[in-house]
Amino acid sequence: ARVGGRVAASSRSHRDAAMATAAGLASATSTGVCGGANRLRKQSSLSSHRRSRRLVPSASSLPSLTSESTWRVQFEFFSGKDASCITPDRVVKTMVKFAVDEGYEPPQGIIEIVEDAEGIFAKPETNASGIQTSNRWRLEEDPNEKKAGLWIWGLFEDPLYPFLLFSLDVNRIDVADEGKFYIPSGTLFAEMKHARGSKQGLVLTDGILSFKVTKTYQADLVGLSKVAVDEPTMCGKIKAECL
Image (cartoon, rainbow, N blue to C red; front, side, top):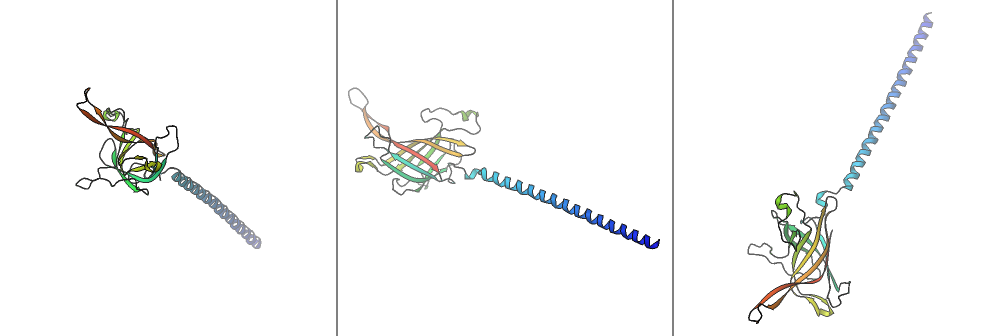
């Protein structure tokens, strides 16, 4: 009976040990599966977060009218000798930056010349304090309608300006026929459409170029007095792309 009792006890001991081992293995397996699932969920979440970070650019990387953005500007000049011609007589590519003057409304500032391989730009003018006074840009509502903007009345927290106007001091630019058609040295004016989006940043499109020619007119019927008027002359198109 005692031997039988020892055998029975021994059997129960082995059985209990086996059950404990099985429970331990099951627990370890369950922990491993759960741990693996948690790791997979974390990795998936991290990958998704990384993808979302790649898909949504930061505000500083978006095109803007600040010195943080460099723009490739293409000037397309037309001589005007053939009014039906749609191909420019001369194309000049440059790179610029738009530096903003803080504290002004509408936004405005200076244009910094980054690259001018063909030497079309004149040296910028400065005042006695060394501040650049030429090569300026400015946002406008409508260059043909000078009136108080809606932003003045507080209707928009972020004012919308559909136009970018700027001027550049240039040297004489030969356009066609070995200089027979040219743009005189002086100020070149540009007008572009200006739009801004939360995802693509600033976009500049549909630019036109012009320079002013001074013309003299009689101010009275008998010709005793005359008046000089600066009249704009269209001379081409302009394109801008942020690098």
